[in-house]
Image (tube, rainbow, N blue to C red):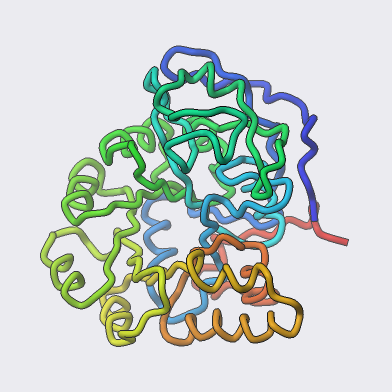
Length: 326
């Protein structure tokens, strides 16, 4: 596996946010597994349900592991050396109005800082270093949303959670970077979905549709099903008919395993992993099209090693021969 050198050369071009020059991110690594939709229309086609296997995982916070913190560029690149993945990330506001990417409202768990993200300026946040899942301090820093929106082009699809950044502010950032082909929003209400569609009908969304009542409610919003991936829950779906109803509208279904299956897989020995694999595969068999996981490298390899993308969507997928593992 390719691991990014923490002393990698600086980017030649500094991105500017809210009028301030930022420290550059680590030099980007060309991913082995790249996902490129190229246009907003093609992004909608990528996530259009066809009944074919889509060999992609959703990397929750990028797929943190030893040496690789969550919501970190180096972590995203590490994940993309092993599997096709979209990246679920967490925008937050700094005190001076910059948008950084950090999950918690406070800094203590994942950085060398303390206190609330929103109480610190961008300059202060850039001086901090990120911790990996074991709490070890790394050389990596908090990225800005601007930096990640530039980095992701032609490599992956970013899924922007909400946190304290509004629908309007996230749509504006996507528009600034002309990122409609590779950036989506997570919205937590149907009103939010309608607002996003009104602001920019080219921006796709991840929308929670956990039951039939919500299915019918969303169906009346006027937001096209082609603009959404339906998040059906953090537990294995019990109502298989709901997934069939969503598929009949042409949308894909996404389920999360970070709160259940991932917790057992992470500590499983080899015989136990075989049993865990069957549980993940059951999700796919019952109609889940995408799995959001804290363990994208493990789950991606386990489910999709050797799986060829469907011919109708093969042009979205690129495997680089330059970064192949020995």
